[in-house]
Length: 139
Image 1: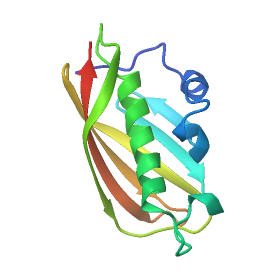
Image 2 (image 1 turned 60 degrees about the vertical axis):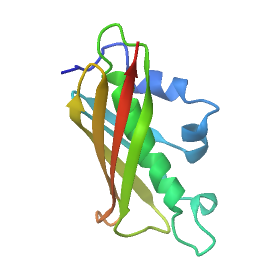
Image 3 (image 1 turned 90 degrees about the vertical axis):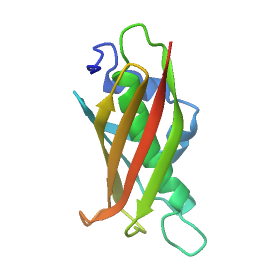
Image 4 (image 1 turned 30 degrees about the horizontal axis):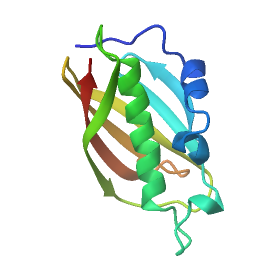
């Protein structure tokens, strides 16, 4: 099982995302611990679908970023990066304002693949999406 790499801090992840999609989403890492990462963004009008609700792609961007950053911070020794090979989302609700949070948890932290689950929680504390992704570890 891979362990949290000490060189990956919340500050390093924030610096790394400048000018990328997570930066455009306003993604912020809240906590990073062994086997988990919590990230969030504040709902803005440009993250909504034309129907006025949070766009599914915004939710996926939040959950995928949380899981991706967690994977990066838990890469095995000698691994240099990762790539997503599969993801799945189930939507249970939505949000129109406030802070939405993704809580990523490692399910399998292997040498060649990692599996991460994320629970996406809306401002009311209600789970609005469940997410799972499989990452291929790159050497």
